[in-house]
Length: 263
Image (cartoon, rainbow, N blue to C red; front, side, top):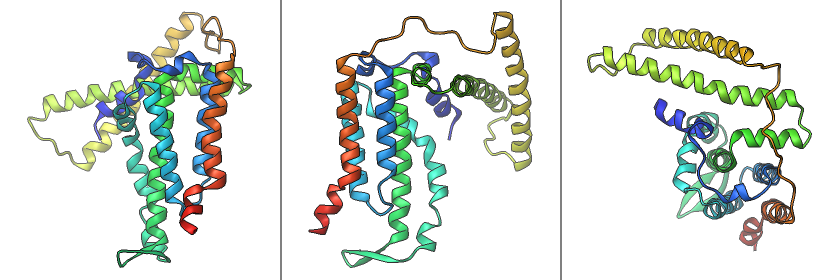
């Protein structure tokens, strides 16, 4: 996976957000809706693929209504694929309990749970990417702080987000330098990769210390400054929260696809 994809994934705040209808609402309502969707989606049984696909349809509808391109959201969700594939890789081997038959082929519980892990991971990252693309990571942290989340936690999230830029930019510079000196050789030995990773760590720490020193020189005293006027809660925010939470929660509770398939 290229550094360009990783950089694009975390650079929303740096390069400017996409135009989105989410900006018309209080960020607290959008954040609460995201949290309810994630809880409802992740609470579905491991073998309930049908209702999990319903959750995916709800996310696609939200994406189309937000004005953000579906391609942008899906592209950012690709980052989670290697991780979820690794998590569920051995499920088909370990769990061979037959649960269904399709066109004469026996489908085991392991394969179903493997697909469930992949879909859940992609949907979770896509939902977070959608909201982050729409309102911005800084706005989400501000909303969490206004809802009572400790400032220490939100400050750590902000610093984590900011310093990701440092790591990715240093990695991109090292990648360009390697390509310029490799003479067209793309394959590297394991020893070289280990050296590159160690150098990246040292360079990132050194640059992060310089950034922190610049922050102290500009008056940083342990907390990020407020962003000015805070948006007030309106009726449209309540309506958004009701609609955006009722559908996924109802799907998780009643599981309509599983119920219909049992008839």
